[in-house]
Image (cartoon, rainbow, N blue to C red; front, side, top):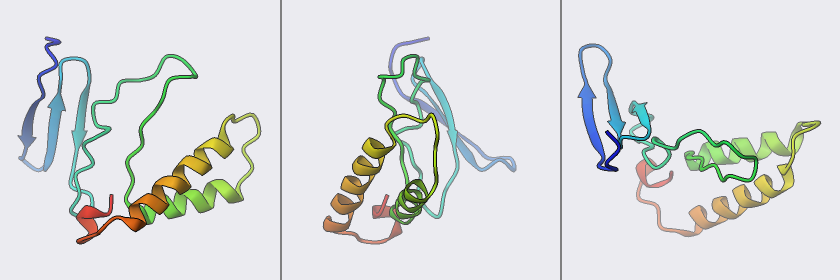
Amino acid sequence: KSDGKLQGVYLAEGVDKILYTDGRGIGVRSDYNGVLLLDTMLQIPVSKNEDSVKIELLLSEAFILHQCLRCIELPGVEHVQEVLQELWNKIISAQSSKRYGIKAQK
């Protein structure tokens, strides 16, 4: 049913994950170093190259991704510079905001 209402259920029994759906997308997430990355959980697959994709990372992992993208060659992959710039802007923004622990650093 696609009513846009967010519904979730905790999957215990040895799974220890949370399942969410809004009727269009479905996602399962587990605790990641004390953080549940929920903003991108129900992102549906993109069908066009110009569609935006949202990525959630911990700040420490954003640094690693930025370093990796700067150091590797990606022949045939478009928009690498734009991704690098956007990632760097978000890193700078996250560093300038107040952080209260690892859960606030995503």
